[in-house]
Image (cartoon, one colour):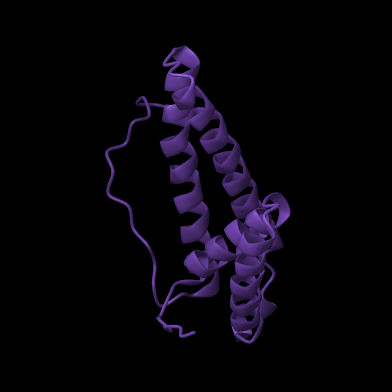
Length: 134
């Protein structure tokens, strides 16, 4: 086995850890679970070894995990609708909620990056879909 080490923002690392935590809680296949736990362990070790891990960002980490949990449920629901070929209003709402939740996820990751003084800060350039004055 081999690995590649790359520079990454704190937000990106903690996002990946949150996703792997969710996978470790929800995946039941033993082989997949072994792979998830192996990667999660490696990333948690890297995070805990960094001085930034000592900063109090519990609220931000919880918010990041929560948005990823919502995205997990949305993806499950939208795939069931796709499988049933049910492209109703609920399907459209689910599809829209993907980018809404991903925008929230990006906002939290950026807040983490700024709070911890990350050398790297992810930027998005999508058109603002929200109504003016909202």
